[in-house]
Image (tube, rainbow, N blue to C red; front, side):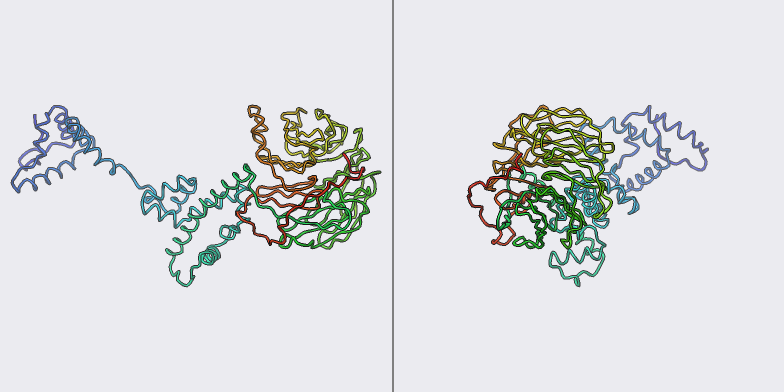
Length: 546
């Protein structure tokens, strides 16, 4: 039985649509290949083109199910090479450019969820996709999202002065880019050119940021850095006991009883010197308004950070104030008199003792606190944990074999350094030591940590960088913990602070060193890059001994 594609003549009874469908399905099921091909075949004469068009038009009138069944029957009888050719023909027909089909706002919404590798692949799909990505500024958006969500990205962009390209309106952004790339803004006359310039700039900036971050991590792990040395030039007693810094300044407390403030744009001389203490400045902390310092003279002084005026002097401790921390209306101080004092900070001129914590059997060398715990460490080899609100003792951590000189508490961790030359990492809730770090040759005098690393300084004059993630991994080996050792101080390292890009340290050698892991070449005047000289160690007065 054959089913011909000839339309019924007027004298024939036209079958119903349902009858045609039924007849066609039966034909497709029962007909042989030869009959089906004969129906659609072309001949040599020119009339076949017209006949083919007629039959093709008739094919279009068939129901969808019948068309599919007919084509399937043809395909089943094709040979493998023919099937491959048909498949190659069908593949592009089955692909749909959904980005082009979507409204521009919807396409942008889809693309904004892509990461950098996916966005790069999408750019290679077609010129249309590349146009949509360029016009919607997807690379700029991706960098903005990274800068908002990742402090390391934002910090690097701030260091490199790239934030001015990101968090600005379109006009300011294009002007900044034109200035950066020496483009005459007058040559930009249409929106398409602006989109292209912005797209090209941020498309190049993203991998540049990624590369810089990778280099930064490598520098930390290899100890690769560039150093800026600040000579404090103390006239009498030499040594820098404490410091704190930010992007604009470094504030240091010295053995000569002064506090010196150094502005980053001129580290050759202090911009401000605070005098008033009658003993060495052993500890300090500042915020946007005040500097609070503690001294071997037993007093705590509050200074105006802008003018250097002494606003208040607190006298409570019977001996040297060895360390202090303040924040959120509270200050905690500790002393050689073996006590920890909790102060209420109403204002710089209104501070009162809230509680005195006793329990240590030797000088309390360091304190830290948050809204949950106050933590103190002492020469009696113990770390004590107290409740912040009620000041009640909670637990005592033991393990160090000699007095504890330094400590930081953050989150669920305490990291402490001792005159037994070791660093210990503790779980504060369990009171358990989870790692011991060994490597310093003398007393570990200072340390700080974040989620990636621990940085410690010791009386051996060395600063060591430790892998915090490895320290918290019980399966990591001991030799993998110390990443690098920094060695330029010629005296004992007293205090340090670090961030993602640098370490700033102070020493008994009367210097402050900025260890820069981001810069690729020294950028500071050569006058500041003095070489540390060998000198005989200066003895520490007994009231400062640990």
